[in-house]
Length: 394
Image 1 (spheres, helix red, strand yellow):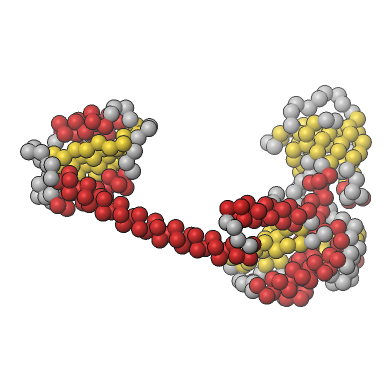
Image 2 (cartoon, one colour; image 1 turned 90 degrees about the vertical axis):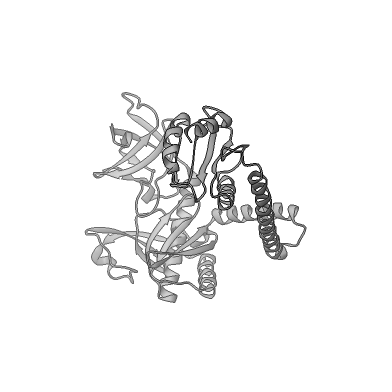
């Protein structure tokens, strides 16, 4: 088996070793080495990345008892000696997030009676699922404060290999589901947990934890948080947003929410007013069209960049007032034509049949009720020609 250097020293990022074999599977080309500092995906913690002999390591997985380093590009032939370098920033980030999760889960379980049921370390944030259906703001504030107090205590984070029987002497957070030797992560008086992840030497290296919010998930609560350098990054991002907001809205930070709420409410009221004015304009437009109905009773109009919703509203307004009229409304747009075909209530004809005969002209689709059909397609001919084809069929 490959010697796991990341367990001997989680801070070891460079190493020299000897090739065991190269091969490929469904994931791609991979390398197996006598020893490695690359951590493989497992226990909720993502794999390390880095380079091997200058080749990018894009994935690391433990498969069938061997640690496979998947690399980009074709593997070189007959290379026995390999040197590796782990991405330090990614590794330490994972160490911070994973250890932060241990502390958070311990606080929720021990001090609030809420156990953790699952853990996911994402690229931007981390989540745990907690066995409860609600978290109050007061509880969250207290839990976050207690987690950060444990971090500031700078407690040692120990890892020990031992038998399951020996591990049973510790106040384990949950029953071990393995046989043989187990790796125990110990934060004195805080957490005792079987875990295969990488961790720093002390809680102080986690730096800080910030809860970002929670949502309901499958009858439980999913808590989102960030640890360590991610907290600084999130703070920087939020500060940048606030800075840009203050350039747009000249108010103190504590008044921004109130001011933005007022702007949104004002915008909604204006949108409502505009919608009312547009409806009145549409009524006037419909009356104008009705006043110009030709002798053959077929009204057709071609518009530029008119939305299908606008065509529908205009069409319904017209046929409600003209029971003996056919209506053809077409909108020419950059890459398509849209249309409404309709008739008044005194006419007995299925406009779907007319649409089916004309839609192939524009490779279109559409449908509706017998008296009112809408659709669209490619602008393979101009709106006037399309309207004329429909009129000929009518």
